[in-house]
Length: 241
Image (tube, rainbow, N blue to C red; front, side):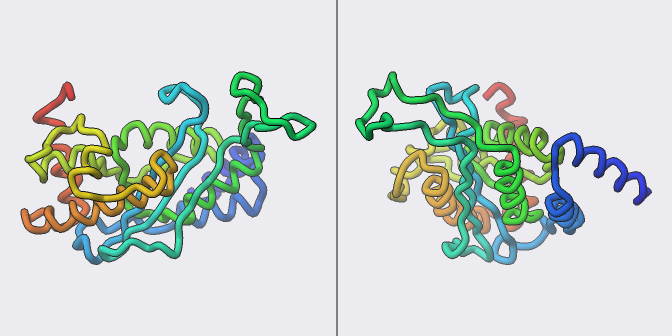
């Protein structure tokens, strides 16, 4: 059914205004092999994802930016990190260069469709088919998957690991799924370079993931698949959390 998938992809690209080059990049990502979740943590690649919401409505406001950082073979890869803006910055000054009061600043507007497509393709290129890790991953996943479907017409279909649930299962001294990220950072003495900056928060979360993988291995959870299983077990125990 290759001809059918090509036909559908062409129609989808036309509807979403994807260029042939963008479609090729998307196709190359889709053809990557699925991740091997049975490898040990120290032979696996995880991609940390964080987002910032533009405006004051953190729940339903527009996606402001995406940050991504990789942890490969147990080490944080500081040479490659992504910060992808999804909106235009608001004006901070008037035409004469005078600062605007907060109430006078222009509203944030989404970046162009072409820019958004390029940014999201860069995210897919960076993530590959690695398992994705976020703190309170359901919120992050909903926003990331929504914008990918809207802009590229693609279903992400990658495993997400929610560090909030996993850490709650492994560190019983603070084993509360509702614990804020700041609580864990303070508990382990992990500094945050710029809190609420997606790349900075992804880096802080990557350091927590390193601590989590060490504790997980000690307790027999030695693979990405085992972390996913642990998270599911915790969710089953606390379905209303």
